[in-house]
Amino acid sequence: GGVSTPHPDGEQVCTDTSTREEAAGGVSSEPATGAHVCTHTSTRKEAWSDLSLPIRGADGVHSLKTCLRKYFCAEPLRGDNKYQCDECKDKVEATESRQISRLPEVLHLQLKRYKYNPDGNIEKIGIGVEIPESFRVEEYLPLTTSARTHYAEDTYYLAAVLNHKGASYRS
Image (cartoon, rainbow, N blue to C red; front, top):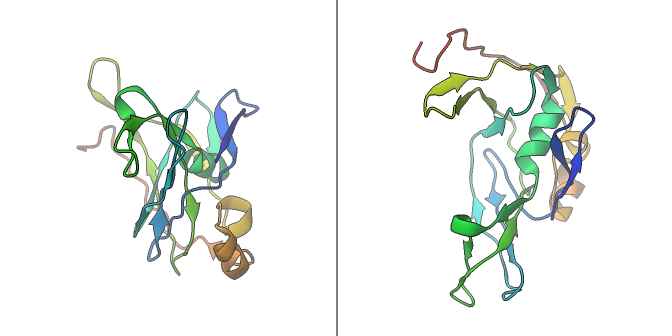
């Protein structure tokens, strides 16, 4: 699973993710590992065409690497969001995390630039995100063991950026 650690800018980032697989033009799996009563591990695979990355935290500039770490960080499933275990049939506390098992030729990344504010209105997140012109897969993306042997040396190159200039999601 992932381990959340403080980032220098005060945000929580994931430093180790080891239980969900994803791929655009590829395959994603989301293992959920039960805790306490249930110790069953379940893995769900799904195809995806892009990664919708979170932008959270204080004002300032973030990096693509920070956004990817947040996306792949392990997430506790607690309270109303407990995991429904197929094995024991109970809702149990669990941890869900992500890894990539198969990568696409073209990787589409979308930054989540809108959020609900406390009033229930949608507002734009105006934080800058530094995106490199290229990046090696193994430095940015958590890979399964089998994917690591196939993709670790691969490099993605920036081909295009689409930037929404409006103040809201409707403009």
